[in-house]
Length: 181
Image 1 (cartoon, rainbow, N blue to C red):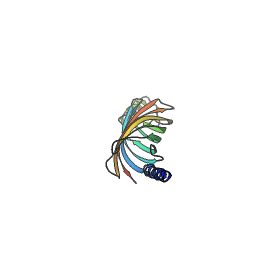
Image 2: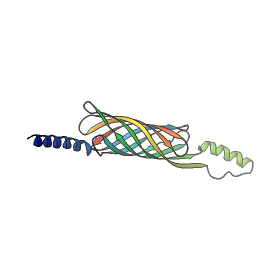
Image 3: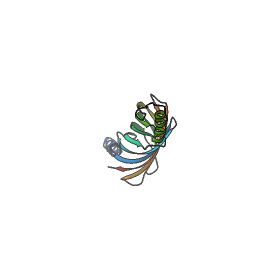
Image 4: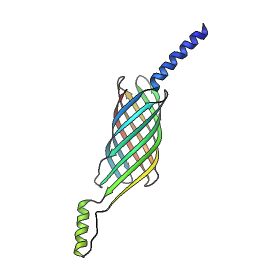
């Protein structure tokens, strides 16, 4: 009888863990990235999948809008979360992962036109408007929290530092909502 009871309890625990483990969600998020003198807000999407009860993996793509410095950015992130559950529907998680970040810069048109006019007065040609782009890889380190509104909807916020291979590091803050499948 004890063996049957222990087996039954283990089955219930396994089913409860499996219910959390296969949780999948799609999210939309607002981001604010800052670093190296560049601050740009943006929008992103994130897909998350629960591997086991506390472990979840997430992939996200964020696009940073053009700033006053004529800089745009995008980043692709692959993160792992270890979730701690507090009460009904509230979880906190540290995160670690990989990041690919791209910056694209183009000289401001009015500055370029002024330089072009000055060069033309001296009989020189400065060519096309200068621009630059760079892609770097790095590591994400941060933390977040999530509140489950109900069985399908949740809101979350996370902060992470991106330690990049080139051009230093940056800080990213995200706030979003997700739909769970």
